[in-house]
Amino acid sequence: MSLTASLAAGGAGFATAAALTGIVRAVLHRHGVLDRPNRRSSHRTAVPRGGGIAVVSVLLATWLGLWLTDVSAGGGTLFWIGLAGALGLAAVSWLDDRRDGVSIFLRLAVQVVAVGAGIASLPGDGLVFQGTIPAFVDHALAAAVWLWFVNLFNFMDGIDGLSGTEGASIGLGTFLLALLGAAPAWLGPLGLALAGVSLGFLLWNWHPARIFLGDVGSIPLGYLAGWLLLTLAAGAWQAALLLPAYYLGDATLTLARRLLRGRRVWWAHREHFYQRVVAAGWSHSCTTALIAGHNLLLVGLAIASRQSSAAAAAALAAGAMLVAALLWYLHAAARASRDTSGQS
Image 1 (cartoon, rainbow, N blue to C red):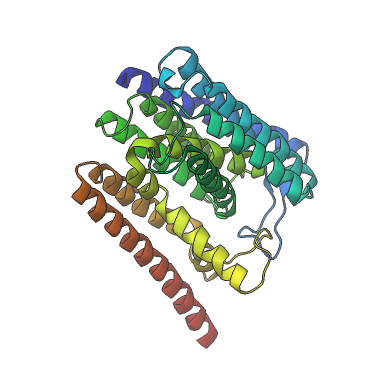
Image 2 (cartoon, one colour; image 1 turned 45 degrees about the vertical axis):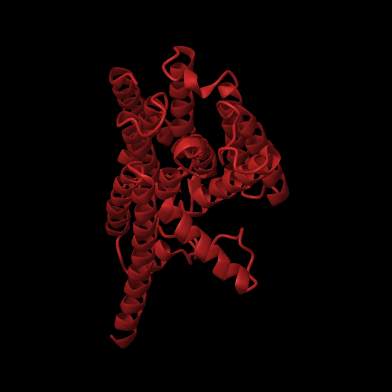
């Protein structure tokens, strides 16, 4: 892996995303494209929505440039199909941001097409489970996991700074794994580009946020991060599972609880663990910083998982306990805050 190319991609992604986000914010504000607070919101003032236009544009351009210059040629000859899928998702998601009423079936259909095309763009034979199951089953399971990840990334975009932090964590983890020889070298520049772009946006999205990603950002960002993780999983599935473990745990448990209660899982709500502590009085900054620190520990476990089979098992167990501990802590903190306010 070229460390120079990786640092250049990360630095350029950061600077360009930060600059373009400011421009996009001004345009959105001028045209009244605002996310106005409602009873399910975690913010109290109208904020421009659509920062994903800058984030996705810069990330796609950076990844395409790395591929065209052979820095990340390991992505395969069909790499461009995955980028086209992200662009299609961004277009439909932007319509939903503007109209706030694009059919759930249309959105899901476009996601299925994009994920199906993306599976074809995975490098090599595209087998995520490394030949342990038939190819058709491998692709079907990988597509289902990817589709779920795209949506959970969107579900988890609920407080200031959280999606930018998650994108930076996944990107940084991928870069470090490649740097240490625990993942394909060509993934390193792609990972650091994701981290750089996410941090550039985070300058504007940290609490109090001056712009939100919108679906135009969270949906394609989840798609591209999912592509990175699935590619990583083909040779390091433990690491690929550990990097987004908090997002997977919070979103999956929350949506399972809503399903058991007979609620429509695609409707907006404030029942995620991180949302509950914010609703109980925690600041966005404190909550996001706690999760960011937790993510850094998961990055460390992902790196440790590549040492041996025993280390992989230990890292997975430690990661599961770490996620469970954080979720329990957030749940307990939210309950304690509500009890305290109820007694006052």
